[in-house]
Image (cartoon, rainbow, N blue to C red; front, side, top):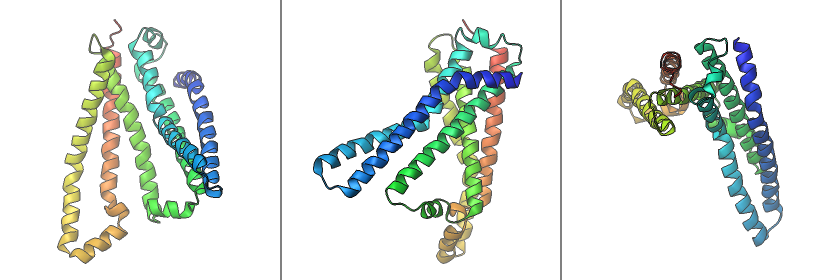
Length: 266
């Protein structure tokens, strides 16, 4: 049944993202054209037009980057908190299967969109004369272990963000009126709580590590920042990933409980 739910979700959402991806391809093509024109022609009107074009390009890329969170949130709200939810929850599937199917599809679209966005930015940077190898070396400091950790951290953060949105919308159903506003308020509250938990959990380890380095002398401290993963020990990154996984699980089960036990479609 989970497979059927996912298939239905993909069929209902690809109409949104395929045009977005086509638009992104057109934007990147136009951006590369503007960059090449600026490189080879010195004209004030052309510079002004290209400048405005690049500004629009930046806003377009930002929109594409956040589009999964916008449209998938709207779909989740529409199919779980409005009259359409009657159809959603009358299918012969358990609540956690419905929720899991929506999450997997949302996560897949989010990952694909982010990858395409980063790939598009890379193309623009290449058109501007940047070296891809130097870019990756700058981001990951030539450390393959750092690259794996950061990629995994990004994936977990995407999952956490999606489940946080699902939980906020689910909590918004507990309010009788103005559910959209309530969902936004719950999201802000959940985000704040998440940040507080992260700081409380990670900050002591960061302070301990920095204190150790400083006690060994400023020279050792500077060397540590150059050689450790992104300026911080790997176990702090791993702690952050573990914390994100735990919060994701909590958000999933909280959303499932509300949709199963507290569903209110009035």
